[in-house]
Length: 120
Image (cartoon, rainbow, N blue to C red; front, side, top):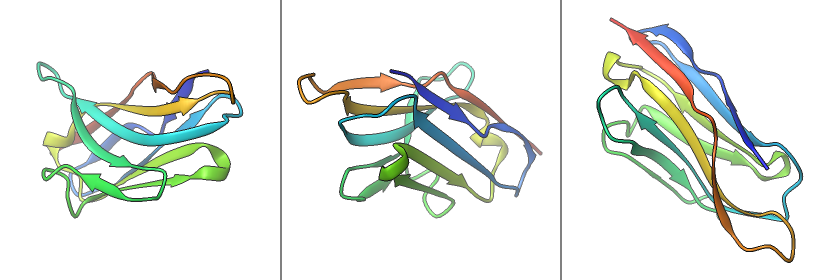
């Protein structure tokens, strides 16, 4: 099973991007899904998380600008990023806790990362 992230790119400050992350196959159940980011020289940090009920939490640094959502029918999580700032420049990683089949255990999976660059 893979998580395939897309949507990164180069954007000017004040612009927007929408990231997507989808599981590569049908999944029995998915719990929490999240977006993390890692800027050069920094540790990976949580940007936003959404649970299976749709409840979200968003890092203070992106609150009011980023919105996380999910489409359960497509096993996909999204991150809408508005009013982007140069300090949002980072590699963005998605992750999800997934139970691939009825008989498997819940496991955390990571996507490959997508680069977001915000120019000033």
